[in-house]
Length: 133
Image 1: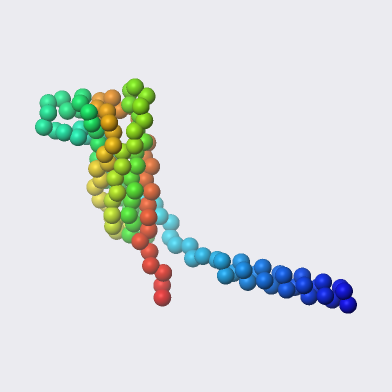
Image 2: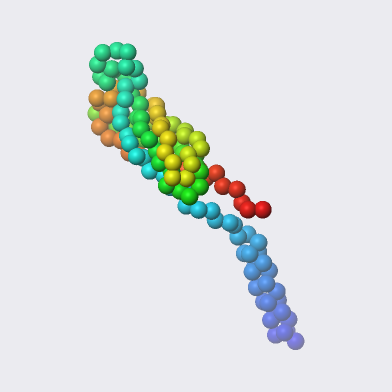
């Protein structure tokens, strides 16, 4: 009798675990990927002679959505200047259609463009996805 009770408890526990795992499953959407197509440093001001030797600098270019759905993109560039200072240039690009490209202008480099030594791309895509009814 005790063995039957243990078997019934074990079966009930396994059933509860299976239901809990199934109930907690989530829908996984498509992969979200983007690529930086072009990237160039640009001085914040072009009204001054030798602007690339004066503070400050932006990263400008185009970003391409390589996902199968529209995305918003948080564009970040990690930048280091010749003095070893670290900066992050940021931009937010909205509503890039699947396969489409849009321009960006990431600001935040508090150094002249001529002093920038390294730039690392770090884009993050957010999908615009609606679950089917």
